[in-house]
Length: 98
Image (cartoon, rainbow, N blue to C red; front, side, top):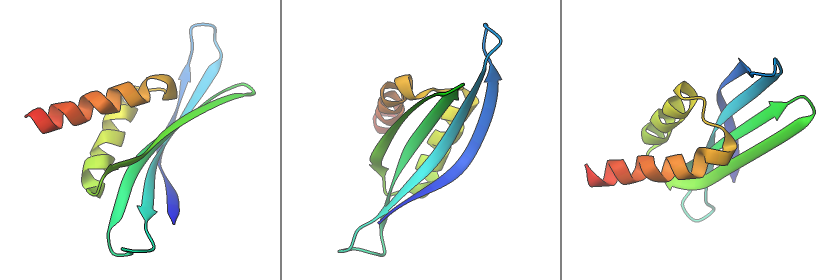
């Protein structure tokens, strides 16, 4: 089962005066085999006028706290869906190598 929990959202004014909305979600996957242990991921949705773009990474960590920290960093830096995967990869690499 997959749950999507809205962690935060923000609206940013672009250079052309249009408004961009970003929504950041915590994804929670609970498998049928092991219902006691969830796997967490991230989803970002971007909306400008009638255009919508989203990207998600389903399985980042079993640590909810780690993924929530990632989402906070993504939000603080206004990360959009197009760059999310590369940035998450870098964040995981930094954590593993430190």
